[in-house]
Length: 109
Image (cartoon, rainbow, N blue to C red; front, top):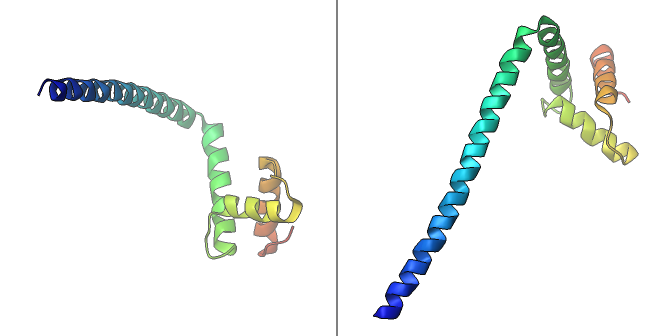
């Protein structure tokens, strides 16, 4: 009977350590989320940022509609680029391709 009590207490100790660890992670994540939210609120006060993000969003959405029935435009361009050239494009390159897609109404690299 004595060995059972020891095993149980060891099991409990393991459990407590695990809980402490997950709690720490949760605290960290909530802190990060708060920081991100604050940054977002600050960024949205800046009219230049808002305008830029709107432009990017509309371009991406248009591309998404034109390429494979709306599979996220940005990712789709990246996938096609990697398949063709074997390397990842820079965000500027993706934007350039997206603009040409919107102008030509079809996917051209």
